[in-house]
Image (cartoon, rainbow, N blue to C red; front, side, top):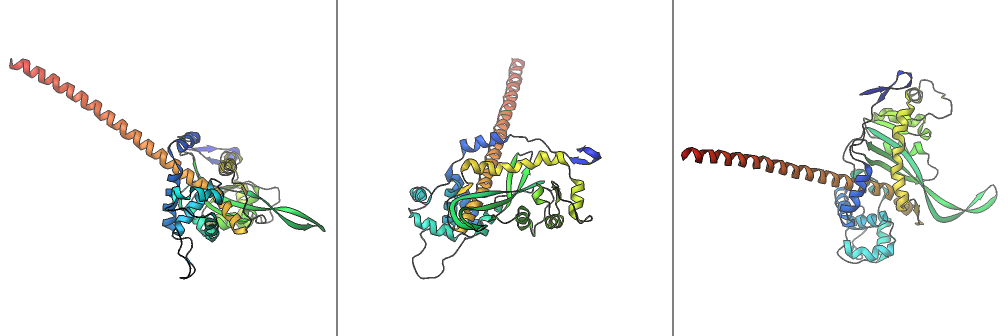
Length: 345
């Protein structure tokens, strides 16, 4: 179905969701548990492989495997637990108890690329709508900075760039790619790093910060259809991909889809993951990526639960239908048997 917008331009039809987001949200908290989440994370970690290896043969052996450390610390970070709380809960998920400093050291060893692969491994389908956005990650750490000859203490800040896929009929969103960086990286620069070397067949949505020449060139290479909000700056290159995309822009279509990306950051704010207490830069980047990992993990479990209970209800309805048909058949059989007995008499 095609809807015609202003100026006679074609606007793709966006199907309505079959199941509401809040029904899936409620089902997740009623039927899921942290042990199921840990099991899912552990299986995904084993598929990807070990995040790190022991440097040499000397020294003590690792108490748990690196995949166990990665799955457990990621789960605890998603729920904003400190290392002391990890020590308290370690015996519930792992074969033995471990010290909080052990978890801190092993968390630092996990590379950022491993968490990015873990995030993308939870996505198992292609989407027709891709939406890019970024958010700031605040910290409590203050560092001395000199601004215009005045020395002051400023809080450190990091940035998380995400590209999500949106499925309107399933009412589900997944983070297709995520990248953590410092505060100075632009929004379009983060999107370039995520999309580079990939192929899609979808619409790409973004605000005016993504309206750059470099990103538009990459969007064409990736096979995406840009739906990026035009900025107030003039276009220098009249024959560029940016100029073509600005002419194709449909405001109503953009408004219907663009706001969906805020579900990722809204959930992170409610979970308290927008603020990190880590001091080291690498740990701050890992904490930023936990936002995307949390979103994909909960979305995967909601989807699995919805499919399970939908299949289960279909199965039992089919059993009920077969029972009714059998009951009718037996009733007819008894009726025929009664007629046969009367005829024999």
